[in-house]
Length: 314
Image (cartoon, rainbow, N blue to C red):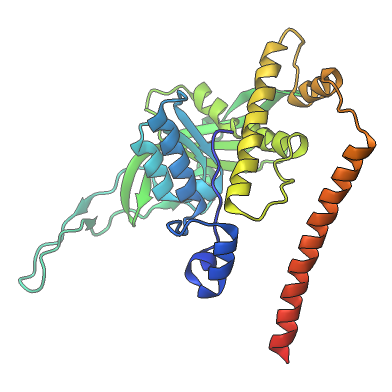
């Protein structure tokens, strides 16, 4: 984990009803609503500009692959993406011809290109996959999983992405089909033409380590266990989770003499070897007092809200 952003609901920034809550939470007034792809673009741009981490690839699910602005933004940073897209995504198998319509003597001169009459329509990636012959598919090993090699059938071809009903960039359409169930995954990739199929196959499976990263963060490091309601408090909590995760990853690298050591195993080792905190009567009373104060503050907050609602009904 490298960075974090708080996704603020659009109504929090546009509805005056939430003005008081924004002030109570300490949300900076300059913060505006941004979609998750826009927030992701900000974080990727920050990583690239800081040069703190060398990177070449960005992998993403449909929520980001279905956003052309996000994909073009990643490409604009000089990065290659391998992003899953919905089956309804349309592409051209060959670049269609376009032209600027002639000026008819009235109104503004046309400046935007349009498809020429009779140009082929873009097809869905599902339709492209269904039309492929059997020999276009090859069985590939994605990675070595915890239960053995992960194998799927792959096909890939160069296509033209759609941008605002016109032809966009030339990209790879990467098709992955489950050997047993036949489930189809479709991805777009802007890697160069000479990129090996084995590389694209490997990238199609690199989202799993990211999902594992978040799973470890939530189950082992308290990523989802925050009890804060302020802008500063949430960022403090997530920063500590990122640091803790970085520390555990470094520890796992130092323990690589043990075969296939996992992050949960590293946490188990740390919990065993680190000195335990000694509890005494005063510490127990202090902890009890702390939680009672927190519970009472929450009670007062909920009580105030319910009284206000009851008053409005009357």
